[in-house]
Amino acid sequence: MITQHADVRNALGDNEAFSNALTLLPIYEMCPEALSIVMEIDAPPTTAAADAPTHTRTRRALRATFPNTSARVNEQFGVIVRRRVDELVSRLVARRGTVVDLVSDFAAELPLLVIVDLLGVPPEDVPSIKRWSDGQIALIWGQPEPEEQVRLARGLLDFWRYCQKLVSLRVQEGGSGDDFISKALRYRAGDDEILTENEVASFAFNLLVAGHETTSGLIAHSLDNALSVSTRWERLVENPAGVPAFVEETLRFGPAIDGWLRLTTRDVTIGETTIPAGSRCLLLLGAANRDSATFAHPDVFDPNRADVRDHLAFGYGPHFCIGAALARLEAQVSLTSLTAAVPGLRLAPEHLTSFKPNVGFRAHNALPVFVETFGQMDDLAPRAA
Picture (cartoon, rainbow, N blue to C red):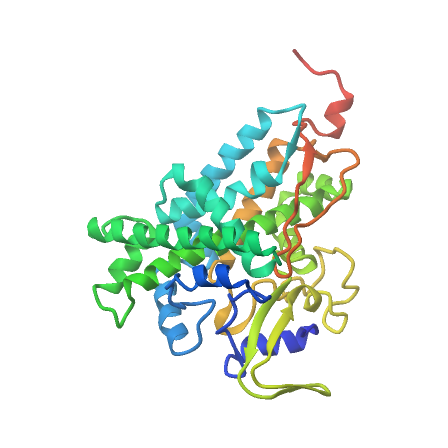
């Protein structure tokens, strides 16, 4: 395990010594039956689980077809994000006076709806995608019993075949749509040396998980941080301009991904410790973001800290998260819209924060809140009929 900020940053940036080859393989020894099912998945490594030169080629394709700067993301995806946020916020407002789970009814739903919009996935397939995505994370980063491993492995195989069918359908349509898969097929231009159809399917396979699970965590963590201390929520209600810095401090204080895996290709010495070649290393992003050698008072949540953007929540180097700008946009629009529409939002009484058992992903079990559209002062005044 590598924990210090400088060491984690160096490891993330050194893809020659720290390979991504086994990044998406389970952290435990899978039972034979589940392993045999997983082996049927012929998804080629593209970005997260690839090294150069494959990573260089597929990352270039992804950058050409998926916007990755704040300006481009807002220009191309801003309308979609705001429309989906408005839909979910309106639904929450309609449930005024009740207790609602902000994880299942907002944080987990928004990023999934956005990513399926971007990929052109039929709305009726969303529940299956959510189930498959949750299953993949549990299979790789959890430690399920053998019977559960088999069930999750079968779901993962179904998920992969579904992504292949999505690509086949777009090929039949001539890749003429505005969705990401169609754009990737046009970039491919029928040349397997640029990108194969299976690699396009692998893009979809990865985006349908990474494109929403981590952003869901970011939104839930942001809301938890804001609502767990009432003055924080009140400050955001009064000053929505503070939302971007608040989201950045959330990324530092408690990232959606606590750890990421690498494989050493040679002996690596860090401090007085030599890690042998062929070792799987867990880079603890959450610990690095709380390193006192980098951040003053690291256990204090402070959106006004000068080094708020020095966190490693999105990684570092060649594998820096391609969806970072989109995740930031979704979290910022969510907080800004919720503070405006539901200023009296507050955590349900006696709520205790808990997370799903998982080595890599830090995801809330639930975040129950009382939905009140009036602010604190409004609650004290008589309401007009």
